[in-house]
Length: 495
Image (cartoon, rainbow, N blue to C red; front, side, top):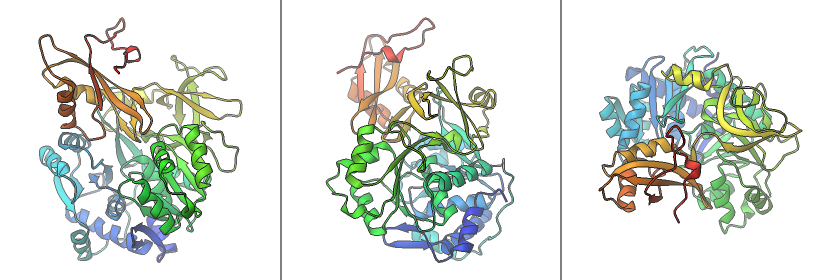
């Protein structure tokens, strides 16, 4: 059967009493997780959810996210993971665009999801652990798993491109299954003896595939960390004798800067880095201090996500994203779509089982992204004589701030809503702690007045906290090209 939820069913049969999830001192076994997801599938049915319906999940890294994720798949519906940090207008957009019929939101959330659901006309259910458990306990579990085809959509993950309007990458059951299986066996060599630290957000494809789905597929235990904090993560690794840690570069930098000596981390056998380029100095420093190998790779939401990795059984090259995983092909293309000469830089294009089915209800965007069966990633890369890939630059304007994607056009649109703003250009500037910081150059309308603090507050009130620009400067004009397009690379950064 193609349904991704079969991974949970199969593992629960093999290892019913084995720990599946840990949160602090609380443990959920695979048998319990299977039963809870089956009961949650019944809840979905009573709420009118049917195969193919979209169900939004706006929860942090808690057991209830995992329960509901597999329940949605089990019911044959489509999971729409939503960042719990989004504000009302953002969550409403995701709900409207996906056509979600139901939203589950964490009870301690500030209520932006509920407000967004009301604005979008979508039913909303708050998830409070005790009440949620009591609700499930009274329901008969639906142990059957809906029959799905391999190319049926399992998950809609919202991402964005040059348009700035978030787009739902439609990921299939077959694509997610393949990426989970290959990543877990070929790269991470995962077994039921492993304990994975899950501090990567599960609403993001990196955490979703490489920690949650890989753990469930291989019967490993997933230690959940709702919010990344170096001390909390180090304590969790030591307490649960974790064997695998996965994170983005800013997490590695934070752990490296923490005063803990790493004496309690002897259980770690592998660390995995993705989401952005890991500085070589951080990689080497982390390995020296904590005595654990770090493997770096590359992926994106549209590829389920893993494309390439430094494999544990091959020589590793610091600064490289490694070589393609099994069944994945890559090409480096010039502006005309032809392969570049060996050693030259070209846009990374990908073909393989994990490539998305397309952008939800956006055939033109899909055709632009996959014009000939090869997904254009928007990343510029080179390949060395051994076939190892290196990301050179991002063709897109994407900003990665502390592992979170920030899309400039979205922030520019918010700035343009301010009555005093004539032009705005948002770009990423280097930041030692976060990798990149969000910055904005703004031109005011003639005769208008606004200071940078006012503009910053205006944006902060309308987008998630990690998105608003921490640096804003006013300028008389922005550099433009012949077509009138703002040339961000020529913008002089204000001190």
